Structure formats: structure tokens, C-alpha cells
Amino acid sequence: MKNEKNIYRTSQREILLSFLRSHPDEEFSIEQITEALSGRDIGKSTVYRLISRLCEDGQILRTSVGGRKVLYRYIDKTHECDKHFHLKCRDCGKILRLDCELMEEFCEHIAGEHGFKLDPRS
Image 1 (cartoon, rainbow, N blue to C red):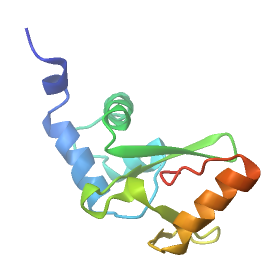
Image 2: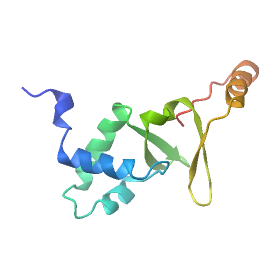
Image 3: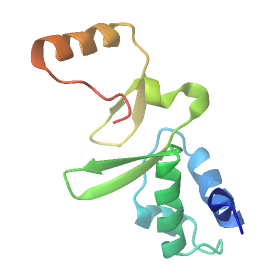
């Protein structure tokens, strides 16, 4: 019997990860991903399955925009993207890593004074 983790280690998975890794700090919808990968032997249902699994594994971050649109971004573990904040331009969509010492102090202020814990992965 196959290990469930090994089922998703396919050429389609590698095609998807290669695409996402080659576009650091960018977010994509499922439609944008499938369009970019058209002609690469990876269908929309496979992209959905792989994205879901990669989100569970912590390799891809899922974010909602305006409560409806869902976007996905590769999390680069070498830059510890889950440990710092990101700024996103509303006009062009560019994402900037925010490595600033003041963010820790800011997070403590928000938690202590306002009762909210900020999540750097969002």
C-alpha cells in the first residue's frame, strides 16, 4: 500500500511547484495557475488537488481577497515567509517582505492594547 504523502509526489506536483517557485512573492488564482500551465499535462482538477495538499503541508499559503477570490502563494522556507509580514500593493499586486524589528513591538502593542494576535502568514 502506498504512503499517502507519496501519492502527491508526481511530475504534475513538480510542474506546479516549479511554476510557483519561479514566481516568488506573487499570488495566483487557480485559473491563473491552470492557464500558465496549459499544455503541460496538468488539468484543473489536478491543480485543485495538489494546491489543497500543498496548503495542508504548509508549502503554499491560501489567502482570501474581498471574501470571495482565493489566491495562492508559495512559501519560501529559506526566507521563513511564515515568520514575517508582507505588504501587498493594491494596484500592481507586488508583495514586499517586511523584515522590520519594529513589527514585533507593533504585534505586542496590538495584542496587549487591542486584544488581537496578528498572523504574519496572511
